[in-house]
Length: 394
Image (cartoon, rainbow, N blue to C red; front, top):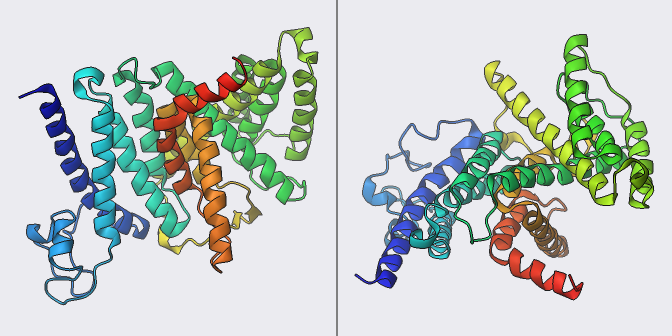
């Protein structure tokens, strides 16, 4: 068997695996928002509740053979099921083709896991306007650990670059979340009062980072956590004051004044973004684990509606999107993540305007566009960045 034939067979094999995972993904997307187990009971027709046989569950083909209807009661089966299976098969096949095992080793495996988890999360976001922490934070773990498997020479991040990418991704979006929310609240303070790690920690790290860089941001954020733990209560400054000082400090450092204490514009911006992102991600994991340990019962995701506020406060960026940035940044590295974010904004704007012109909802979940933009960036970020830097003469 020639190398080309072996590679083609490998791609087809992974496409078949992808279709099977897509079939399971349909179960996850349907059941997770309802608070149901994704393992039991076995798949059944939602109308007549007949348990489906293996022949009814062959990805794509069963739907085509049955002409989109239940074998028993004849009720219509949504075309979304085979479309998800086909999309998963296509994604797995393209990743296997782009990262051949002979040259890239196991590089494609974590990327396939990320593709599957992120596609499921995006579909749930489309249905519920919410992103499950189990998928987004789980995908972040896959992205960070998967970087240890990436082969060099394929434009994929090293473990260190994945860590920085996750921090930058979360940092950019959490600053949009905080500053945008502050503007929507007409510069009144947030009502959140949590400890030991909270948005107050994020705010402290963002302010310290813009003044002193990354290490100062991390040190101040850690001290804020320790101090609030000792005091056993939130230790905070009002957000209007924090981000007023943040803006003043940013203007000073970007104008070059920060050179007096060894912080240039790049170090200032990086310090604020990475510091805010690191503690936002830490807080997300902390409260997810705390909720899990306390067995806190949450309402099914299907009860959620279009986003307008968070705990009674208006939001500019949902915190689910903030957490989603972690696996995307880890998968891409910070430069490609920013390309993906730009693509997501452009796609979201086009679809959002078209939806409004068609008389649809003014709310558009951003998570699906972030996922699409990220995987487009995986393919095109390197040539796009090269072209842009060439225009700048760099």
